[in-house]
Amino acid sequence: MDPNFLPCFLLLLCIVAFADAGSVGVNYGRIANNLPSAVKVVNLVKSQGLERVKVYDTDPAVLKALSGSGIKVTVDLPNQLLYSAAKYPNFARSWVQKNIVAYHPSTQIEAIAVGNEVFVDPHNTTKFLISAMKNIHQALVKFNLHSFIKVSSPIALSALQNSYPSSAGSFRPELIEPVFRPMLDFLRQTGSYLMVNAYPFFAYESNSDVISLDYALFRENPGVVDSGNGLKYFNLFDAQIDAVFAALSALKYDDVKMVVTETGWPSKGDENEVGASVENAAAYNGNLVRRILTGGGTPLKPQADLTVYLFALFNENEKDGPTSERNYGLFYPSQQKVYDIPFTVEGLKNYKAPSRSPVSGGQQVSAPVRGGVSKSTTGNTWCVANPDAGKEKLQAALDFACGEGGADCRPIQPEATCYNPNTLVAHSSFAFNSYYQKKGRGMGDCYFGGAAFVVTQEPKFGECEFPTGY
Image (tube, rainbow, N blue to C red; front, side, top):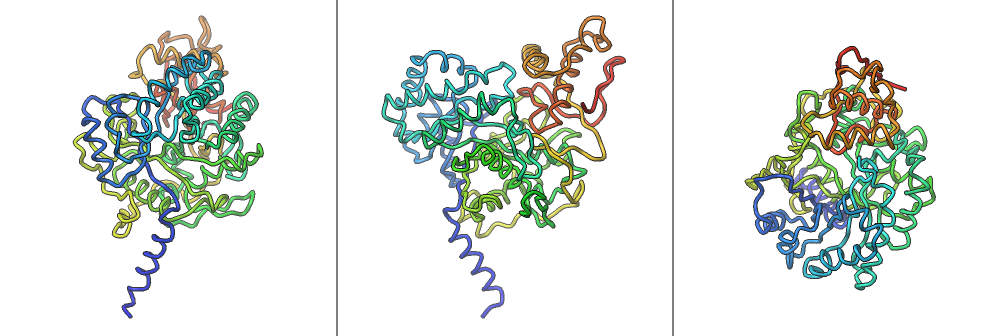
């Protein structure tokens, strides 16, 4: 027998055995002015063997193009409509009739994401979320679609109070009673699932001195033992997902399933965005696809077959924020691949992940984590305003940080120590950083809808000193 035959045969058996282990979809964002037509996009998605797509609205051209394609679709009710959907059941029914009933079942809509990362929305929409979800569901009941279409809402990992070790995962206390318990009750009662957006890149970028790049990219590494339960983790993605499972378990919702509605890695970033590169993006997404399609569940939930949506289908040239925000795409607008990875079990048979490059950062994860990001033990990070975000977005984010967000904004009041320079960017930077530090520098705590980003050098605005901890 050929000595190479047995390993290849076993790998093939593994792939066949786990063919139904998980599912991979893609997020189709459209914040760009150079994307191909929706019809061309649907043909591209089909040509890659992708069977699921998530979109961020209910654009008629997109939903019509998906008609008859066999692709399962998750649509989004945008954050700005949460108030209306929550306060007016008739609005919810009208929205469902216009955007769901008009296309289903020819367009195979399988889920509605009510809002997106609502807890970090600077427009204070959290209080409308549960009522909006219930009204949308009741509208589906009215049209007898509730058995076919699930209702949920994607959360960012910043909704976690703790996520390291994974076994200590817990939700932010101020969100548990007003939001999480009623949301999880709703998901349980309707047979739906929790939608989670998870980005190991953010954790690695902010903490490359203590997180191994191999651990973040699913490459061979010594692993990290969870001190709480003894389980061993060989990748950051599993650790983040199990932190959410642990948070669910802590509230006695072990039976609620999970779908990862966003995850990805940028192929390009600013100088301070450690790890953003084509090679690392290819390694993360390629190894993730293999992990999902052949790997079963997580260490804590080995039977939890995950559906994962890669972010994103295209590079989107009109997105705000740092360079990475415009470079998460698997494809250029020309439909050429940014890097070559498979999306199907068949494609995995001949796939070889990119070879390892020199590793930056440390070889372990050792510091406590809040909100998905471990605190650096050798350096500090700050959160500052993105001057390209625009006045309106910055002002809304500043209002949130100084209001509901609980940032210490006393130093930027008139005649206080950080009032000068009296500019929106300077004041926003101080407020964002106060919020970021108070939250423990968690993943998603320095985002504000794209109005802020993390820096590794202390900001300088006049004589103002920016704190690094509370």
